[in-house]
Length: 410
Image (cartoon, rainbow, N blue to C red; front, side, top):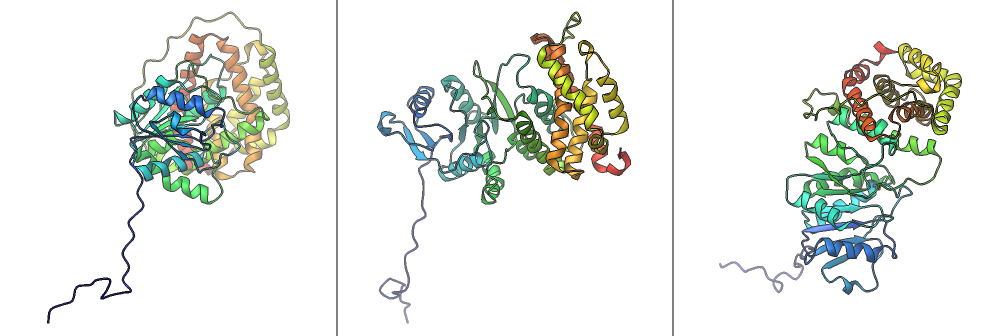
């Protein structure tokens, strides 16, 4: 007997399978998580100038009343709420960008987090073309700053990223970033998990994520653009937030950075600049030194839980120097940072108290650095390189302490 074909009439319970929801493919998507209704039109003009005639997907938390003014741009709502850390990209920002990339099959996604600075059309073009035209997975802007700017970056973020993750990226904590499709795909699970745990305001370190995935990272010149200024809150709180986030990321990726690997070849170190005459400490430097002196008298009990005797002895000698001779050597600073990173991992004491006890040591480093560079770019370049090289040289110290902490107990 011939079989009867299955049809709706023969099988009334059989329903047609609904077609999957599809989104139009976008070559380039740009996320504007923090742009207000007032700032958005000028941003859209800059994007149109950067990509004339191209169809670009724009995700924004606000939409313009007349989107037809930008006919080549497709505007969609940005669904990820911004955190109080609106001067830096967070897990929520990367999660929203990764979802957008997955939904629209984009080759490149730009995340632009600073609404205060006017968008630079040539830089936007360089960011996008760097992802679309090469095999690079993450591109960050490199700012041209004076020798006395971005000191926390110089002291901690840059040297730790370079020493532990092999990433010679001058500003590893970005407010703007360009990511490839596969970088977005890698970020999606971890960032969505953080968002689901109400930890969307967590600072993310994409340079480290790219490093452990074996993805390529580079930076492009930001021209005259300046990085955003953090909110004018208490410096101790700001320092603890940034340093604590970085230490937590280092802790989570310990199995990666403890493995021996060949670091990329470095350019020759800057030539040693001519020495300056002894400098008179500025009021800012004197204030930093005074904070260190107070901590030297009041925080010995906490420091003794974190620092080995030789480091505490070096700090005691440092506290006895006159302001015009106040110098913290880079290798001492590198070991101090590594010791606090380990104490953060071991939870030697409350992490907020730990980071608070580290702040005056950072101020001592900053006082030493500022006294030595004297607002001269050649001296600053040399000091920055010496600092980063010291972290690389002392990497074996943190690896040994991390693996055998009891052997090195203070």
